[in-house]
Length: 194
Image 1 (cartoon, helix red, strand yellow):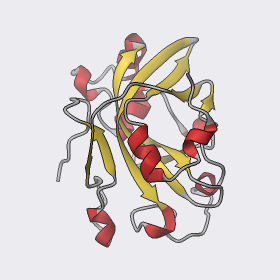
Image 2: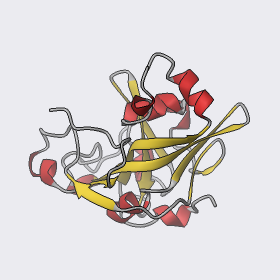
Image 3: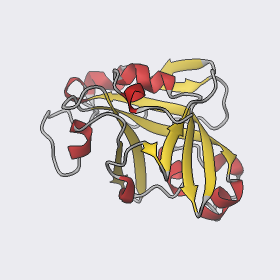
Image 4: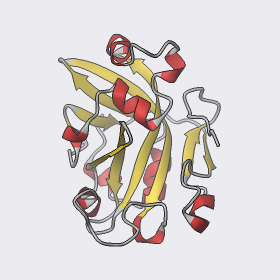
């Protein structure tokens, strides 16, 4: 069952935790590519120095974050695209970064998209890796996540743990918030590399 937009119309910390175990689905050439979401991070806009929307003012880059919940906020970092889901009420720029997924279906497509990566475990165990595996680009900026060809389905209940977010050491106190959620003992959860 595809998650309704109302699922996302809640605080980012709740959505980030409840997305763990859900299924990210991408339709490519008529075929389903599916990954179980095993890691997320919440970003709370103007209350969070690590968020792109900390200033409280929309920019061309962050405009989608200020819009309705259940939209994709895709941005480029270095050579990677990163996928976020917009949460909460319109005008409140909160969101959730999808950090890692466990490949379940469409393995041939994922393997083709990550052909230069030898180990299967490294196909989707990071936010830039999973977008390459699922061919998620800027074309999905502001895309409704309840519609094809990119959506999220209800998944399975899993054990979830909280920890510090990754890669935001210069964000002051926000670097210490336990706003990263991951499935306990899932090997596809990304590893922190200082």
